[in-house]
Length: 290
Ligand code: PDD
Image 1 (cartoon, protein in one colour):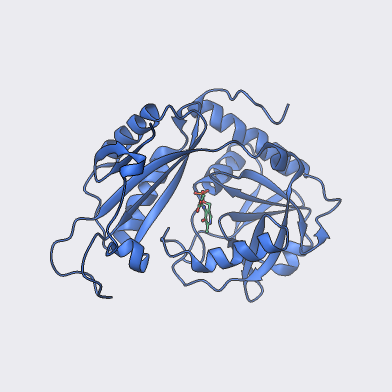
Image 2 (spheres, helix red, strand yellow):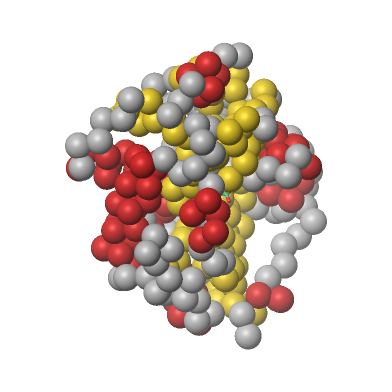
């Protein structure tokens, strides 16, 4: 039987139900996280949980557990579900209250849910890269909050899917922001460039690991806004996320990036990222790079 955690209790996944007046269901009034599990161990758990608390507090939802308590219960969930390779999805909402846009004035208990899913590594795409489209970023101006309100992201991802692509690279005017569920990087003359972590993008945990390995390995990085023109003229383009890792982008709007092959800097960052996983979670069985 698969288990889920609902408000601190480990229960059967099929029993994990919420009320129709849960504010997450009605308003998207909550935040979430997706954490990768390799070899039955969470990767960058602390960073994800810190972001979870930060997102949550930024909308005035206070999680009634410490990061250590959350870590412990997620570890127990992994064990109960015998999860080896997959993800943990967790979300917190403001709770159940009569429908009203303003926050409930009475004391409301937030609804906290976590469950697991088996997810393979996207080995083929990590090798040969993915196709993308470009799309205007129509989202709100607090993309730094990992909000449940994902309509803008969903519409972008669906347009990409409709065009047989993996991801939509979004832009505001001439400036590239991020993917619908990923951060976007370009490489020019050996320099790795990605949007600064401000209110216009989500500060990706994978992005931060990549920036750290760049710094540790003397790969030059620039965290700054880059334009659609720079994207078009880049030597290499890749995206990053918890489930996509360091994912080469080989086509944008039907045009190949260079020769349409994974570039050398992207390849190097994939190797360095793989080492980070191994450091925290042990060596992986299927080494797609070999
Ligand atoms: N998406 N930007 C957006 C808009 C995202 O939704 C995500 C992650 C990222 C990358 O963040 P991280 O490296 O911390 O996963 C950037 C998750 C995986 C999702 O919604 O499923």
